[in-house]
Length: 157
Image (cartoon, rainbow, N blue to C red; front, side, top):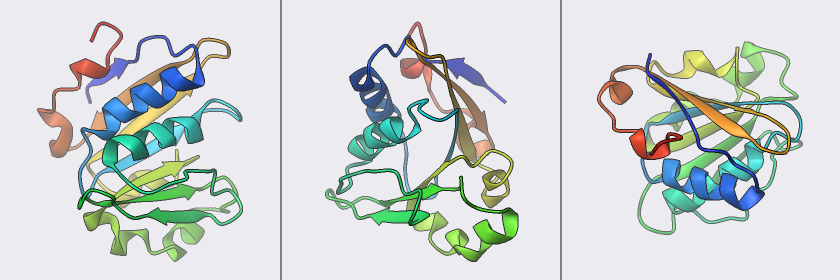
């Protein structure tokens, strides 16, 4: 399970730009599970992911609608943006039928730790931490990411 840490993300724009770099590595079928406290930058990071994937915005927190689908602007996969914060457990996540769109979309699940890992063996888990200066820790899982070059995302990349 390879792991790397982002450079310092001192502004929202740094977080978006780093997310865009990560987004350019994503393709249909990829699952990204985002973890971090309130205000950690999960939605800001998702805005960058969306830019990198090339989907229509605006990207806002889906807290009250639970999930939003953002279609591609470039002929690529849609981005499914899920907020699991208000979900009561795995059964409610399962009710969203994410597995029906997982293979043809990039799926990003905020607050998904402990819930979304079972959606796919291949996934990236991104944990945001810090207050004024944030860092993102990326853990990759599964054969999809075994040989992927993520070095451009690292603190020394």
